[in-house]
Image 1: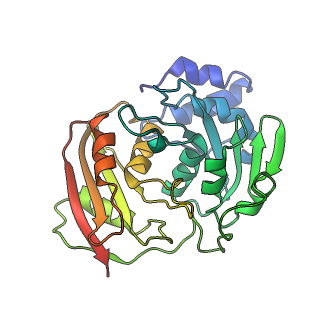
Image 2: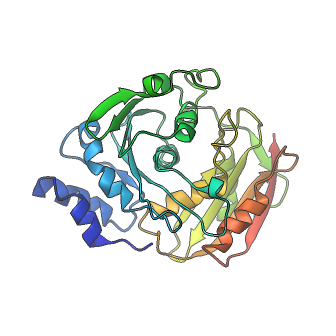
Length: 291
């Protein structure tokens, strides 16, 4: 999982030297978090040329197929994404690069994505997941040298379009409270992340927070799809944020799982399976409810 510095530089070799240096300075920063904020040209123009860079963050021990994606936020920032596979877990737990980039943007507080650059056309699973964005129909999709829109790639989606202010990235917070004492900052972080869950179909808010040996903390929250199967559990969201950061090689020493006390479904067993593959840390559980 460690950074391959030569791989990062090689992925940027088609760019001008000054542009390479600007990006490498951000990639090598102590607290790099998968987000590129400084670019030498418009982000939407640069994004397709960074897909190979994003693929450097891929973890694909099963397929060996490394995929990268780059999301362009309305803020002008670029968000890397890469696929993740988990040995010992169901294949359905795999995170696709497009999903990874969207979760990364969401984790950074981005409210909308203008474009998504990828190396190949998104699979049906990802097209359905992307339909949860409130601007899904007009989302620009760049594949190699071709640019189109999600609405063109997905002419007969399952489910109605999400309205502005009610999509994956821009939905309102959920008022939640803990039923258990919040023993520390990690539990507080999990509760706050749960409040940003996107769960319009089950209302089962969920969050997962991890702390690495270097003190860095990462959190993920539930992201639902109307088709259910493309939905992403909170633990995968947290592991995605860690993987796209400079802490991707630092061991996880603590983790907290915030789950709804009376939820309709549970990701507890899947979460435990995922964590066993990357850490020996015990999982603290915090029960939450709507307030």
